[in-house]
Image (cartoon, rainbow, N blue to C red; front, side, top):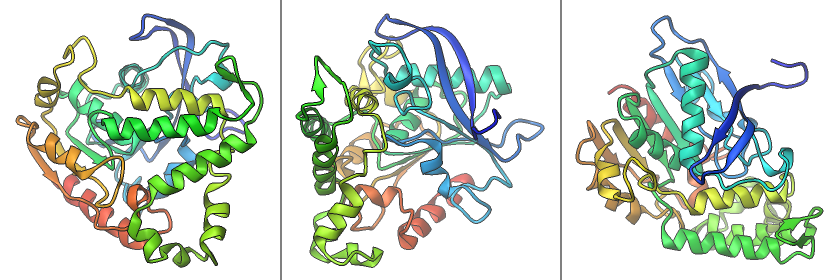
Length: 338
């Protein structure tokens, strides 16, 4: 690894995207954990979620964690638009429209060209990472043995799309947004975005039962200020918009392979599938996974096990939530045993 940097860069070269645009010198940032086995059959791919970088998600990797690096070779590819892989913040404007399909195509090249990997023991992802796991299972059924979709879906539901429209509206209402781009940091926009997210990401019961007190917050206002007002300020605002666009246009069938046929895309999946929504998640709703479950007609197995939690969408990323973390760990252990 380069001095001062804890990740590697896969230089993908000039890449033609689904949109037809060609991105010169496209870069995929990634980090690996553990050792690749001699048969290269111990690989777990763990894509990142919205605004996250590998350092935000590696907390669940450890000998006693959800993903064990003493047994598995774990690869975290950073999604385009997150500030490490090619993003508006590190690429000459205008940044093109990128899709999950584009991301999976470059991730596939990383695994096959750099490591010679032809099988994935598991693709694990939360939120946007879960959507990538679904794309992987549909696009590369010969390669994916298992997939865990945690608080994710095979396509962005209309309700989810509307949520993201509210996030965009809050962020771009800041005067720093001019001519379709942020010229400087949108201080008010970040705060407005955080307040929108606070209402959607957590559940009604989370606020009703004042569960935020368990994390040491002294009042609801204290929670909103310290947990949400600056939650996204660490990221470039143009990067956030780029990832929102990827999210909103997410659909495993939106490609030449499936030509918009959602049933055919889900029917292409042959992996062991674990759909693990948050029971109180407001935008990746359990109902969407229930609908998808009935269409996974060729999967080796397909189960729907909602996380029984009041933490809403954040039940799938339980950094400081031992109960939900234990539930996820047990579910993944069972999946890896198949």
